[in-house]
Length: 268
Image 1 (spheres, rainbow, N blue to C red):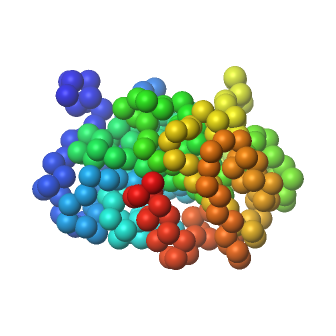
Image 2 (cartoon, rainbow, N blue to C red):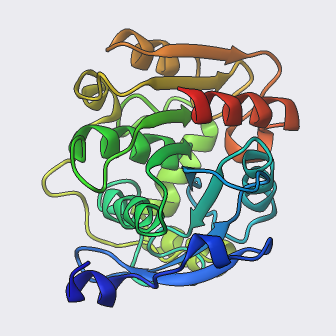
Image 3 (cartoon, one colour):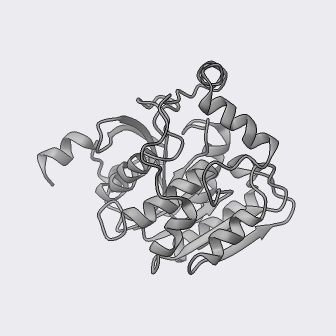
């Protein structure tokens, strides 16, 4: 391993890890420090890891993220969670799905440096859009993924068709909204708009194959209606799960769904 890599990652010997989560700080390719947590597998030995990407205003320490990490680890894979830039203890400012691909890439590379030969990704809401774009943009690289699942993800940018999404746009685009984001939700948001506009999730999907792809969405999602997952699944080879009675993202993912997700991610 190069000295550059040693400077970017806190290297661990997986065989020496305890059953408790281990924390580290990663550095992205554009120099942002990202907090990350390694959750050992419930199995004694595994070469598989799952990297979990949270939704907007989330973090590695949010209860729903920790619950999901434990549930996935119980299915036989180690789990890496992290806080996107501008969230939790990570540095930088949120770009709401654009440069967050670099955060996910750093977490995937860390999982591989820890000794996991196979790394899958799962993302929720904003994290769902990030895992789709990451799978397309990092395909075939050391930061790429072996399987990807997007839960409650948008298909297209700038969607304002629901009241919750209109509130999200107010938080992101207005100075007063960014103050609410910072002090109300603990999320520091970049005031600059996208330039250029990043590849959209639905444009990313055709570029992911042959990597296995799963799209999961609740039929009671208040943010993105069902045309979003159907558009994603129609854009390229993908498996689609429409979950009856499910709302939005990690907060709405129950134990049964997380168990099925864990099984899919470890075998896909």
